[in-house]
Length: 170
Image (cartoon, rainbow, N blue to C red; front, side, top):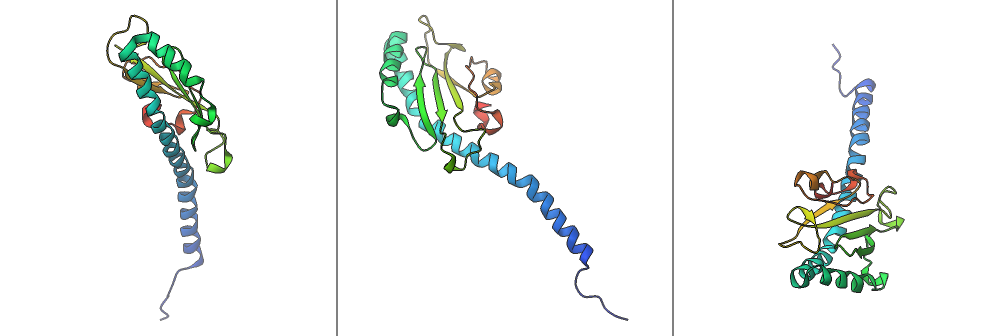
């Protein structure tokens, strides 16, 4: 009786097919995860701008927010750019628009390049107005605002596909 040592060709082909299927599922999921991490880094950079708007509102109300927005937007774009952010703008109502980079060498998917994430300040679950009074909660939105809506916050929409957004901004 001959003893069989090793694997047959069909067994090896099955293993290779299973590995191929796992790779086909795992690689796109990993790429989306990496994009989310990079976009999260861009949102961390926007936290300084959020603080600026919040402090302006608490100190001088909407008039101070408008003044802060005007001053901030007049800065050179190079002062607001980072590795993953090409520009940040503050609207007169305190809404911050973060425009992601268009640099293709950073490993971001093309669906992300140049897209926007919008951070909307809320007081008592409504956008800032002249009569707003209280502390600010921030709503983050991309092409959708499901997370903000679930919290009852008003949110302006950006155009970043939600699949690449951190969970707070979907």
